[in-house]
Length: 348
Image (cartoon, rainbow, N blue to C red):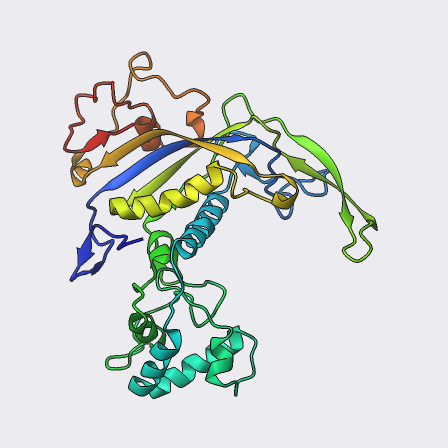
């Protein structure tokens, strides 16, 4: 991965202005049962683990949907995994830490305490002991380690630099790391946004599956642990939008690692992935580039359905009006009279 931003301010990544907004429409098809639980049912349910549902405004119905957070989470996790898999960990970590101790002794002492806590090592562990357990990558952080995750990296006060930022810069890591630039971290919004995924107008069939918890010690069924769960069956279609703001082509390529992992069944969506649930395929149906001149567009054009048909299985009731407008544009079709190529370009 390389620098993930196209727009910069004083040489630093910025979301202060729009350079380019890429909007993609994906069609997701379930290839096995899919279960994304609601936690607690929004209304009484005879099922122990009901699937999550969304209340559609102006309609007295709740429909199963794919939460944007689920899509965001699994794709982000596999972008991070790909970043580590395609790169080697820092080989001279000990030398870098010793140099950091010399240049910033107080910050190094803070860092060493945090590292020991994250690695579950005694606070007085020797440097050699720490190094035998410590592994870092310059490209991506570890969100499970307090000392390594990107979080609130602003300097504490004028002349008082954030110790974590100092350490990241010392090891040659982009601040924040490349995955966090894409997806965000506490204190900074990401450049990638997902919408919820919704099913077609015909609705979504649901299966109720009975399962039993297995005791990990005996390998037998756990008494009293029989439960029912709702799941979307194979062959059901959902659509969602992906919005990319000010990303370079290299950064889009990094994002595509996660999308490929999900579509090629390396990753599972939702719960019970270890027992075959959550296998899906993704098809990119639309790709549009929006440019700053889009701000000059007046009202959203009213499109003729014969000239601008809806994508198959797409339910316009579930999405904002402007996204519905974008979903009906195709590379071979003419742009509406009020829309110019300086405003947007239809790539797919």
